[in-house]
Length: 264
Image 1 (cartoon, rainbow, N blue to C red):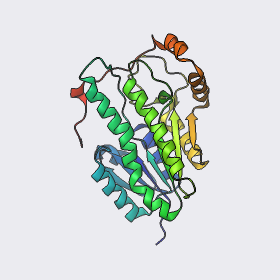
Image 2: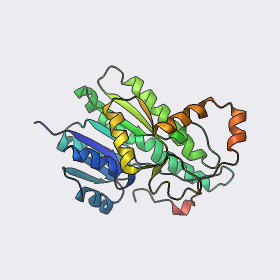
Image 3: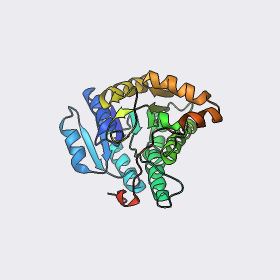
Image 4: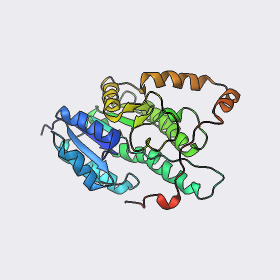
């Protein structure tokens, strides 16, 4: 049986994930949309002009995410593109004990959530000898910013995890793309109390993401201005970096009681 082309996207209920869904659906691709809240997924799917499979699943739930992946493959075939986009953001301070739970939540979603998303597709893609696995990291993963140790280190972990996966899959026909966006206008950034230069809309970011995926890029920092910023950040000696960023704006902290329960 021949299936239309397909893409599987987590964090698809709003922001970048929803914009990516619209991009692929506009091409006529079948899209698999994953997010915690069904009603938000239904709102996204209502505006798509292509078949959509909805999976109200938390990326912290490995078994349910595997079931969603297997169901999507059964319905749409092995997808051309799988995007681990689900992510969360909050500030944290190591000196505050309750913030350790915030750290665990950020790593569980941002790092292990990406691995849980991609894992069920690796075997089928290798067998098909085609496909591209994509993870959304961040420019914030290049250096550690004060008050955002968990978020920055989670995105750094995504970068190195995907690099490892890319080398593991070299020669199999399966590609890996790491996307490092700068500031994107979404609910994740609207509470940041500091300047956010070179900000893109979610739709414009999705357009550039899809182009990088189509081009088979191994890694792409988007927009290009943030790529220049990233190069400078990498070159700064620790003492210079510390002096420049000690007073940098900080992400708002999030109380552990505000964290969504598992599976919510």
